[in-house]
View 1 (cartoon, protein in one colour):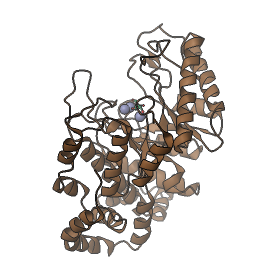
View 2: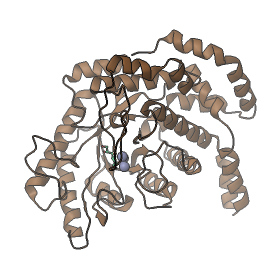
View 3: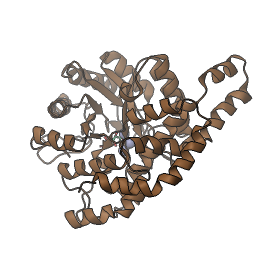
View 4: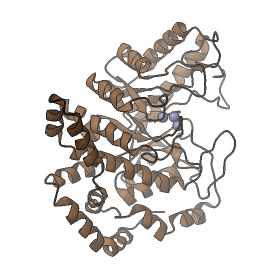
Length: 424
Ligand code: AOS
Ligand code: ZN
Ligand code: ZN
Ligand code: ZN
């Protein structure tokens, strides 16, 4: 299914007057509104191929319908999202779940929807049917060099798939860790991981990045071999300039100050990118901004400040991805909500009066500093984000249009009650 330009225009014309009122009202107070809109238009957030189907928990899975059953349909889904919001212009693939049969054809299909291929993701957290050795006790950190070798080779294969599609980064997330004290020699596990990553790193093309993702817990509950940003940064620093830390918002211990982590990684030139999601307790993978929208804003506040300080381009300087899993909502609707929340947080961060904040900080004026951030956070910029969409030919109300056009019913008609379990 593809959305027609006319369908979007029709939808927008119905909402035009109301939108204009809201936009005129807010933009009167924002002299730099044009520059904010411009940045919003350039900002793209990659959609992970594994977030398009209904996920589950270890207790069960309640299937959705009309879900994408193959890579082509996943690309089609992201194409739909991108047509609705013009902010989801990339897809992040997962190997081996998404191996393209013909890279050129896959590229052409993505291109027809205006989509690029973002970071490719390797998978050494599951055993595949044709696989020789098991990852039950880990992969890149494994005590057995033969298992490590197999896992390294898989990552090299993933890089090669990515090259064929025009990706520019490999994301490595490892389910390597231990569940009981004594199970692992931490030092050896870390060194094995480093050695394995070095081999993978050696296969990266010149213009590629390696994202080292960390996670404090799960699937192991005593230790994770890349458990926090310190361990990831240590690896990335030892590996070299193409290696970076990837921050998944759901991978911290409760109450961690993620915005401070982000600020320091950026300062060191070692922040590679994001997996956006939200969580209440753990790696809940909930819709971005649904639980802690203020935290999301504070993270973007650090990002804008830090990227500007380093002269980085906001849109291309870092890898922006969603990593979420959907048990209850329609995955496509949920992704639209996540993208919207990210765009709002970004827009608000662009609105922060940097000079006034600096001044307040210099004067130890805590009240002023807090007010600057909170006033900005409480400013409703939804109409500004909508205006950016409108100018890009996207829908003023993406979820509204998704419902009006009964997109999911269409997909069910085309694909049947097809449900494929993906999502972590
Ligand atoms: C796992 O918890 C991580 O968030 C991974 O980034 C991701 O969900 C996984 O690689 C998807 O396969
Ligand atoms: Zn992640
Ligand atoms: Zn995760
Ligand atoms: Zn996940």
